[in-house]
Image 1: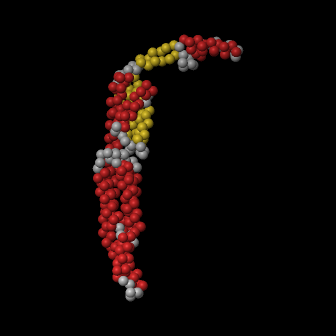
Image 2 (image 1 turned 90 degrees about the vertical axis):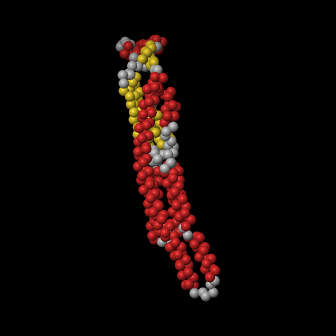
Length: 288
């Protein structure tokens, strides 16, 4: 089991490159990758997404990349046409506004498109340095998710053990519940003081009530859900959604048991089980 919350960081700092990758994640129903890449690395976006999605299946994942080439080869180009056009328009404005100050170089440097920079980037070389850093950050990110996942799993296992204990207690009280239903029906028939009541009628009514109020089927399904939950908890695949679905089935059965119960001890166990299920579902909101 992995948590949807994690953190990973990796960096390189040598004579040519400074590169860092930071990864953070939060719980989310689906996989949502938010990339913050330098503009010149935008062409690698699909490859970065693929590297992450191969190892992460759910959650909002924020990726922050910083990359600087210390020996960057920058070529500056002067746009002569733009320079001449800006110079002419400034002189015209100066004349119309009757401004005496002459047009100088400082005025022209305010326009970004006169001087254009062209960065010569060897993308293959950048990729060879960047992706190992990305992989390192993902490795750290996965380790943190696994550590928190183990904590979540341990807590859930404790809650499942409590549920199992209460289900065993409920099962032991099921016979007592059936006996109480029979005794209550017999008492009601006795209170009628009708001598002609056929015993077969009593048996028939008792059977109807036992079918309606017996909790044996619900107990059987609860035990099956517990076994399924425990098996799923040991799987290596993303299991958060599947476990939450099983919890919904838990809730359905325990609610039915609670609606049928007329025993105080049994009702208390129902409350405890529902409380455990709710705590498990709260934990599962952060499980992949």
